Image (tube, rainbow, N blue to C red):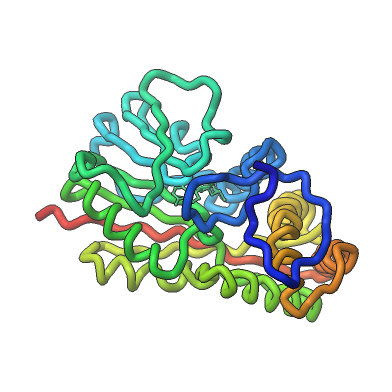
Length: 288
Ligand SMILES: C[S@@+](CC[C@H](N)C(=O)[O-])C[C@H]1O[C@@H](n2cnc3c(N)ncnc32)[C@H](O)[C@@H]1O
């Protein structure tokens, strides 16, 4: 399938060569092709640098015997786990699964919103990073409940999500378009802020939030260029979604859309202090 975005009567003509998932009912709006795999590798590097080289923050004990679930897999968490840990990755799309992997790693096409019954109490750690463009409002509490169920008592969960970003007026206008797009798909742009409360409601304890601020744009050297390239690539990937929704009142043609994103990119390069927040939120299932 080359483009599974829902179309409306107001859909604006455009050319899309991106490839999207075809998991029934899933709300995910980013592509799942080689270009996206390349972006995810860059994004992993951006996150790792922002958190001083650490990908996993919970205070693990006896990690060697860990059984780990990675939801929306792709982040290289294996390199920060004991080589004896057993790792299972789930995703709604198999195209991004690694073609070869060590025998302590396995993968399945499964949604975080409906994990198998037999996984109850199975995992010591669940990792999930950057599903803001994947889960609808009402799916987040469901995902958190599922994670609680599959964790063994005392096990940890860690989420990673971007927070707000800022630069200047063009970025602000684009942010409004981005929010309108997510609202139109019932996706939650503020999930980074809502997760601690969702975790509390699901009976998690030791809820901890770590925030970092990442510079955006060439004014900040290589770090700013890498984070700019990562996030601008996300914005460009959302072209089909925005145009199929008739431009959401912000753009009228494909060219308008491309020029709008070019202008955001330029604003970041020219605005010292342009930045985005990144959050890692982790919590523990009570020991009893
Ligand atoms: C933005 S990517 C992030 C990948 C990886 N976690 C990382 O940080 O590099 C989001 C991933 O979540 C997957 N995904 C989307 N909806 C999902 C769902 N309901 N359950 C599990 N994975 C999902 C997508 O297919 C995609 O691989």
